Length: 327
Length: 260
Image 1: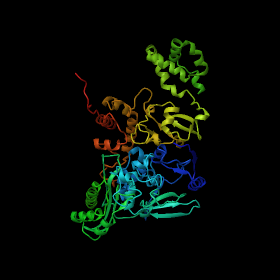
Image 2: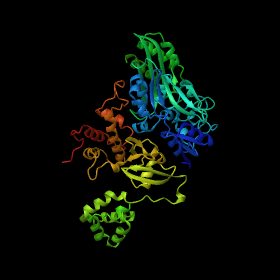
Image 3: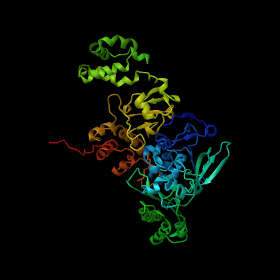
Image 4: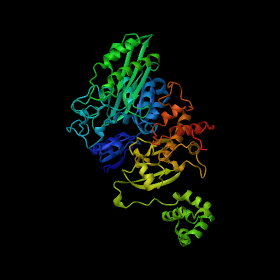
């Protein structure tokens, strides 16, 4: 690790003040990703601002939905009785990620800000436009079995690793962030993570000097008809090859609203908008699920080692829709 | 610390008088030092402690209570931070480099080498310890963030000479081969007992929407919830059996037999 100054913030504005004084400072919440990156010299902050004392760990149910504190732990969030009852898809997605130890440490805000696990991003001996803009993309011609099939660019084919965020995307969450002067802005989840385009070094639309304070979920009718399905190389404690979060609003067997997102396929949680549009107003049948899945996956652009993800994506979509329909 | 100096038990005093007479007065005057223990360890390996079992046991049991943690040379520390926290119910105050992880602090500064450094990247679980009741990875925890917290390591699970039930179960079921992952496995499993009691959910939980209630763990549930602890020897069936025995309190049949 590069030497760094360790600072402790007592409240959000103190944290932002510290960050603004040093362009090379970084926030520390759970630390499960940034410490790893620092050990690998992928991240080299000269100052760490510890957020451990900030009071941002409440999970607050309300009439409009639920507000998840940015510093609430993943474990506490997944196990909150209201979240389990009203947003089981989110609980399931969180519990699909990492291990019990890591979920005990990881914060909700930090989960959104974790970096890709592309092995070329992690290996500082290799070119990577995300780590070192302009150096090239080693994954494009390298081993890209784990990489994107949607929305990639010539600059970057990495995927975003979070499970939690896939559910948040399907649930139309929004991210509340705070600026130094205390003003807040709300970022719709669809705009929070970004596609790589020509700037893969940017994972999301946060600006320097902004602090996530909460993730807010609107009310929905999915609780009884939702699913999170994850396909991975081993049963547990592995990143997704493909994952699907799906929620249905139903009247009888008629789908009045479908919200579906995919993980492991793009630089951000991938909303299956084509599948959603097709399903709206249709009846919940296996044939319709298959058509919706095909519509979505036909637009995929796989790389040399991940063509399997297209069929896997199709089947996982169908599987998730079946589970959501059966409830 | 000072009180400990003159508090050698009669057995301990006899041990020093018999085996290290030239050191006895120094020990009585200024207390036990690490080098006394090193010398004792040498005698132990030569078998000379056998006749002093009681005294030796008492000494080793409290060895870590007795010493202040000496500061490193100033040149060895950049961005030094003083951290006070509890380790296995004893208060520790230590000056560390800001980069020190909890794992390195426990092993290199406090002398508790039970927690193991496997991958040092949060992938293997060998460094698992319990902080404020929850299992975490000490390799991904900066010691500087532990101010005021309470850390339990494998060394703190037994009560005096009585093993924690999870330790006993691991012994009975041979829940290890090389033993390197074992301290992490056991700390993880001990915290898992609390999680199951609280009704915490896992990826396998069927009825997530129900109110949380205490869970009796199936083999699959144990495998899922212990997936953060990798065992390269593959002692998994025995680890699962040990955790089952510890949770149920019932006699679970061992997966192994003595050779005839």
